[in-house]
Image 1: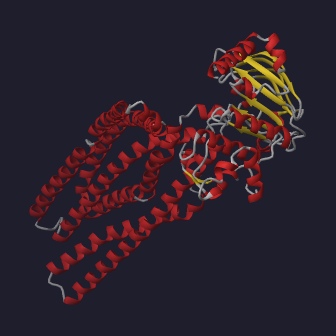
Image 2: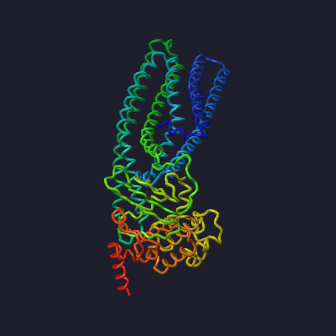
Image 3: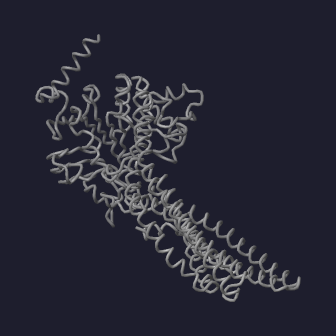
Length: 580
């Protein structure tokens, strides 16, 4: 786990290594200062000349500024290294997520991934900075100050031999108890973020049903749950403060008692006044080092839980893998399903698709119809290899989709979802997701085909109109038409419309289908729809039922031979007659 994270240091290795080196310089300077101070005090006590005072004074000033110089540089390099480390970590996680198949993404909620990219990485960044700076300074200071106190104070240094292990044992007990609680808290953070995300995305629904009060209560309950857990953890962690204070004041009390006793009983022969002063300084350095170590301990305890959550993402193996010599050219838009069955996970009991055998010729227009939950969308997701078939083979252009270069395959298969997404930016910027090099003339032409040109040109800024996040400032039908235009700009060999004209009127729907027939006859078109009118002029129509193909044929054939299709047709025809 640690090795995997340290791989994110990369170009910041220099600063990462330089920071501990600079900290060594700072610690050495701070440990020399008490020795010089002791000599200065002893010289004054012995009645030295002014020149000696100036000499020792200059030495103290030089050492103090040298220590400051090392400390400032260490702070700068530590900040650069930790911020760069966090940047690389975010980069690696985000790029790793891009490699995930849908099945990988299903294992992590959106809110959980956001928490890992923000809160968890912030915790690890802080811990990393403390490790390369404070976690180097504190142990070094502890060791150097203890050694110097042994040299100066002799037997008095044995006080630290008893105090330090007792303190270490107490801190370890606190950490072991707090660590599992931190893990639980971060999981609840995921739930809280999920609640916020749902509320914001569904704000229109919340307001329509006047459910603001319910959402507030739900958020308050999740927030209160986190507060209670953090309070519980803090009650445990906060014990390191009193424990540290007891160790500090016990050490000071013992040092003061035994030092004073030795000075008095030995008449100043065992310890002089200067040595006493340096001994007290070293004792403070030792105890402050222990205090810093306790702070590091708390931060690392939090970071360990975050580190495990981060490495879960980094070590996740994409379920969909590309072959070394993957095919990069798709011959045509023909599609074949050969004995295909599929389930979303190996542990699932039931198959979402069963025994699918189907041939679609290149350039055909194919309609897919079926009730909700009949696995229409699941079927088309196997074509662009968003999922891999559990059994059987899916072919595009006569080649198994698993043999294709994934990018090449998906560039030739455009999918327009019912709930497709528009991103923040202008209409042009959104449409150029389909083709970054598309000219303005090409964009206008494609928008004419998708029946989007008329409403775009009604906007004051036309194609430079800014689209809010998620397309919040355009209607559902307008959003769908823009998404169809974006897909058409890819000039794909296969175009899939997954109920993506559900928000447009029947006239516009018919115009879009007419444009498809006339303008892109060589493209294979698959239309998933609930309306019979959207698919009745297709070359063939597939009727799905409970994950299986219930029937395949033209509109007239299915009306005669397929009970599911016939029932849907009669219900919709009757509804149309009633509306007239």
